[in-house]
Length: 338
Image (cartoon, rainbow, N blue to C red; front, side):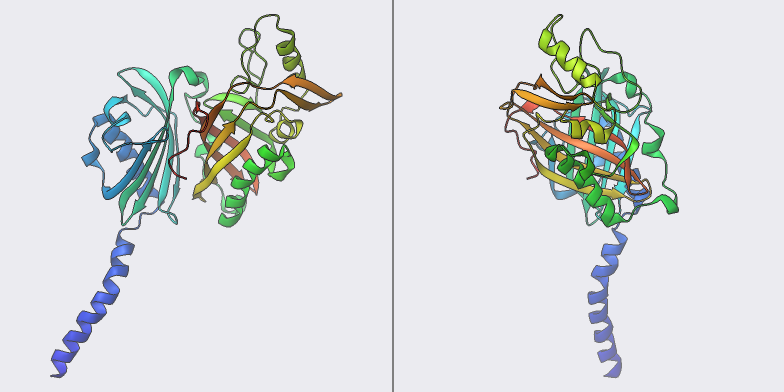
């Protein structure tokens, strides 16, 4: 009888312990998450969703539309990723994000942001941001900036909770038009779809387009006095992340909704944010704070939303690099993850 009771006890103990062991066995460490993402990208090119472990109840969106796995880029991906690859993985949240250059429809370049979330070791969420060739600056998407792929030394790391606060503070700084609300390093550089909008070497303007504003203001017509005034005003704004925000360069943004920061990669010092920028076009004139005082300039006109991904490189409690994607979609478009 003692042996029988002992056997029953052991069975009961195993039933209690097994779920915990099973969960541990299905938890991915950082390298496991990165490897899974690379397998996922290879599966996209092979048009084979069965090559990666999807959960039975997976949710998949591409450019905010919820569609079945196997459609969208699963049908059109044709190559990649190229040398431009940035990965951020979060073993705590069991999520991983990649920003890579790919090909679709045989030879068309695309910038792809992908987020995967795991449950029980399987992909339960997949999110694609696909930016087409005509929306990207390919010359800056050949290789990733070193800061985005290098490990952070232990002494330069920022606590996880603080990284979360810093990432979210970026959106507060933009909507508040106050660059001091986020801790930017002086050498902070911001790129969106490959275009340099803040910091670094100033890119030559295309035609008469205002420097530092390729993605943020409509191209001016030759000789347009309002646009030439805008170009002059922008040349008087500090070329820093904090300075541009405080100057009011981003004043045309109506609001930023659905702010999420699902991935904190402590090894790389990367915090990755997802959000949805609303532009209602009600603001017609912006007042930029420049070195000589204030200048009134035309605001961007057009009703649109911009679901975005931001990779924030955080070191010693400051933002050093920002690599972003932006999708121009109809006004009111939701992200699919509200």
